[in-house]
Length: 203
View: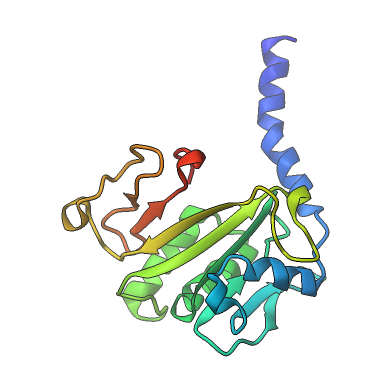
């Protein structure tokens, strides 16, 4: 295989993967709910609000909750099963991110827009520490009856707006696997990454 062919394959690979992700079948609402709830601590699951996708791919509230927790169902445009849980005070920020993604905005564009809106006071964002729970794994490892993911992985993100290495005593780059570190230091989106040790340094 010559160099040109290899480069062509590498160039096309992200597009092929994205195409596969776009063609994923949207899970039934009841399965989305079960999967989404698995991201939250057990004590918050029964009363949590669940946000998921309609068969047309629109984000909606699938279940109204009674407590302060919001659980987010898997994104059908993403390879793998990723579910999240977070306090309601983060929902305006998260909802705005989903809205901008639907407009075709990429991560950096979304952050630039939301940063400006937060500074302008038009987008609420917590000033105190706020946690995001993540739970994810392979598509084929999802157990529809329970929402569990076989060999699933958990990680945690704690938003600490405008925190720095000096204010937290944390490194701003991955260090020893499993050690918390501060990402996006000094920005509105500064957050403490807490990855499981066996995950390495992936974000």
